[in-house]
Length: 142
Image (cartoon, rainbow, N blue to C red; front, side, top):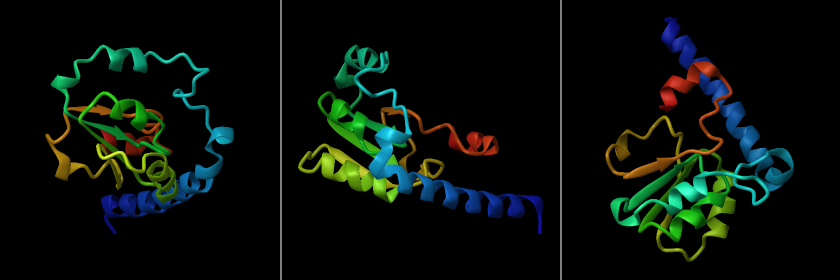
């Protein structure tokens, strides 16, 4: 077996374990992860987004959106907001949170597989998502 096929097989196994871990903590996220989006955390991203002209960016995406905490903020400022995550439980929570918001769209997808969306989004955010469990995976994500 070639080294690339072996590496792919190992990554798939690790990815499955990683996805299962995110799925397992989805409903207790607050006690497991310190999110930079929590109100008590000073985060410059909100001020940055508020300073953007929303007319320049119609379609924005949150890569690794998790439970969708950032999507509500984005949906009040942009015409079309997408949340992409690979955890079905995280997306289940995001879906409930943003039910009825016509400009919020959710997709279950590995963020390394975005070729179909090439040049679709005007602006992309990723908070706590491009911190892979295996450093060799990072180059596939950007």
